Length: 211
Image (cartoon, rainbow, N blue to C red; front, side):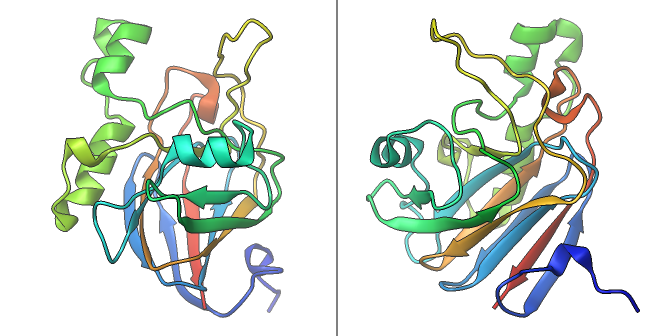
């Protein structure tokens, strides 16, 4: 039997291994010291990502604190994801993609309508995925904060303009995150079909937790 290439170099032994379908939400607890590996199975799939502290629901990922502390908009290997209390929540310990986005946000029915036309109003979006994932935890729309977009390419031009362009991922590329505290991770495997963030074709991703 051949070795699973998606497990190569993974720290620890897998204790949870799940394929998240295209367009679907995902929620899971990752304990301090455990590693979460996200595998882009078919390439160019954007993975919208939020973190909440398991011990205190009011503490959650802060894009502002993270960007300010590292002095860079993009997340790379070694980047520490900080909470709104300024505490480390997770660290990117490995990535086969050069950088990841912190500013593109999560698509919603409302933003789709503004960007792409009223005919997109009924299309499923990341905000709805986050609401579904968070429902069991008792969180609502006010708990959806600025998120990370793994594998997504949002370049910043010299004049400050942003663009959402073709992703920089490929089949089998991955990112590893070590939990620095017990966290609850919420994911929207982005359903966007109106821009190139996932090549206009949402695809599955693999989520592996190792301890």
